[in-house]
Length: 365
Image 1 (cartoon, helix red, strand yellow):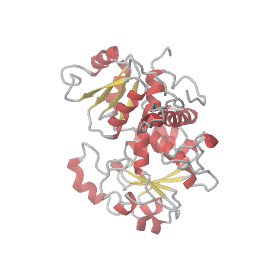
Image 2 (spheres, helix red, strand yellow; image 1 turned 120 degrees about the horizontal axis):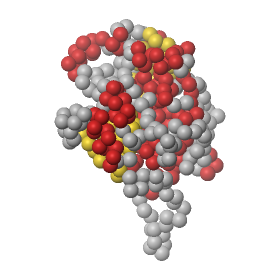
Image 3 (cartoon, rainbow, N blue to C red; image 1 turned 135 degrees about the vertical axis):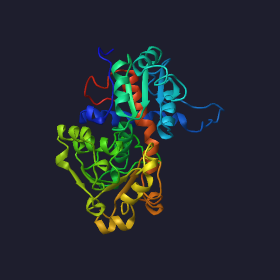
Image 4 (cartoon, rainbow, N blue to C red; image 1 turned 90 degrees about the horizontal axis):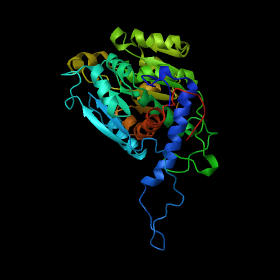
């Protein structure tokens, strides 16, 4: 066991090699687990064959993971609960109205109590300081499920989806053989992605922040369109990490969505009105006029003809129109599916094995 409790707040805390290791492990777990989730087919003798099936890692066997969520969640919660089950463990959903934290008990005391009974804490919080305090006092690993500054598990799913769809951006990459974007024995390994131009249009929120500290270090260019207002731009704490990692040289910030989508291989957006910002809705809708992702915007801005689209969900129509969101450019639901596999990889490595931070190596077991 590691001598120091490992935590993960943001992808800025990981090297490119560690990020790639998580992505490769996610793909391995997906390949191993999906056959178990298919309808069981009986053989001619009436028996169900499992001869070719291999169990995924059972690193969470007999272990419990606390889902400490003080915000609503669909994808993150479902992904976490189903992933832990596949790893042999169980989850305890602890909503803000279920436990004493922040009401009759301090975060410090709650971290020690929960960490004394569970083997990992997956925390979805408001202010980023909340999860930092949890990690400071927890005796078990803490993984950021979302905070005001960062959303690492979302961007990991984005990256896995790009690898699985690398053939869309490079005709020399073989196309996967099945509907789950998995390769057969001939192409077992996840395919590399050529350097891309990735455009983000919208509010500078936690998803963008982890994009800014991860994607340039993986070889991609990032172009961002936000209104010219400090509250819609990356906060100083985030930009300091961007500069520290040398990512700023591969990032363009502009107020013009058409300039941002120029040459884009992938266009990404997110909600303009995050949880807790409902009172600002009218002003935000006014400030983001012209930022809706449409075919017209990308055509006028000069995006690559075969550009693709991502959104972390939930989506509102003012952010992207139906033609793009439900059309052939969209990878939205593929990303949503991959939330499960990247969270499963993080649970396995961080909660089950405590080795995420220990070594940079290509591993799938």
